[in-house]
Length: 85
Image 1 (cartoon, rainbow, N blue to C red):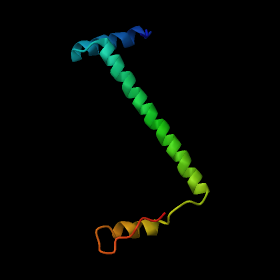
Image 2 (tube, rainbow, N blue to C red):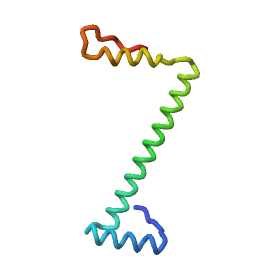
Image 3 (cartoon, rainbow, N blue to C red):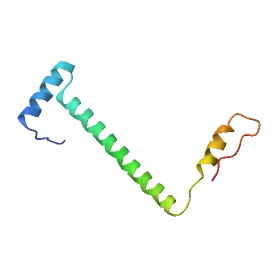
């Protein structure tokens, strides 16, 4: 169990919202914390992926844009290309 301190104004807004939604304050707090954590985890994954992509770019591990477009254009044709590596 965890206790949370919050300013009176925020607590009043929480009470009002809980009444309007017919939900408990605990339910709203749990939902808000879950959404916050999911957003932070997504932000962290994006940051990690960006760092990895920049490292690959610095190492010269890139595919020419024209090659990518040619590969996409070949989708569904008899001469469908393998993706460039």
